Length: 334
Ligand code: GDP
Image (cartoon, rainbow, N blue to C red; front, side, top):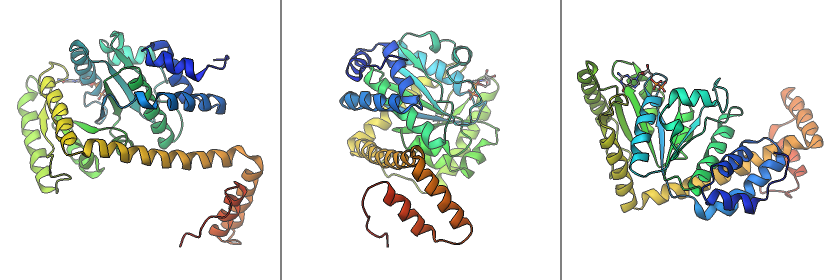
């Protein structure tokens, strides 16, 4: 990407649904180069009015629970009905080689060759917050390109589910009978952010066990106080392998949207998310400006040493560093 792309032209091409333009814009979003990020920001700004047209589904579940198999089947079902499906991921710990086409072809053999689907692996490096921010921007680009279903996958093993819950409309938690992950989900607070739970691999000999496990989860959920009066979390049984339950799963997702649109909470959640992302982007920008300025970086290092040695107070050093960013003096935070 040597030629400086024109944000206006790139935004137009994304809007027209060009896959090449979409990939190019995503590459800019994921770049660590300041000029690329500036172009990406300009493109996103121009596309702001074209975003928001998808149902944003977070998909969580521990490795082996059957996410890839389910997304392949579910996504293919949806494209068969005329939807355009984007599959993204937030996985900062990923050892998967970023952009591995072979990986996606193996994981989602049908969807990866489906012209109505777009699969993008997790940005491969950075902090969880940074990776999530890039994924969120990628989601917006996909929406501008006309994708009306966005699935954001996470690996179900920690903090990333909470971050993903903050960028999607609903979280679908995939579980399996006897996986021990009922408990994992509860302990890590994943159960609390789930809006729909699906007990997967409910096929063959496992179908009975899956239904029993679903009943257990329903009972466990009854103990927790419900997050919303309008929605009690449904616990379904599905099979990504046989396709059983996938049509019902889609109906539940649509029902979730209907219920939350009716009481205004769907739009309110998105508005809240946008404001939180604005604040996160500002925090992130301040940190980047600090590390981009050699003088401020040196002052920070000196300050850190003085604070570590107990010679100076953290607040005073922080104020001195922030003064150097040129905002003027802020009000005291007390
Ligand atoms: P992921 O790690 O969550 O993406 O899980 P995968 O989709 O790769 O599936 C893990 C294993 O479970 C594979 O061996 C799949 O063949 C198997 N599997 C996935 N979905 C199902 C299902 O619905 N039923 C059954 N019986 N096996 C499944």
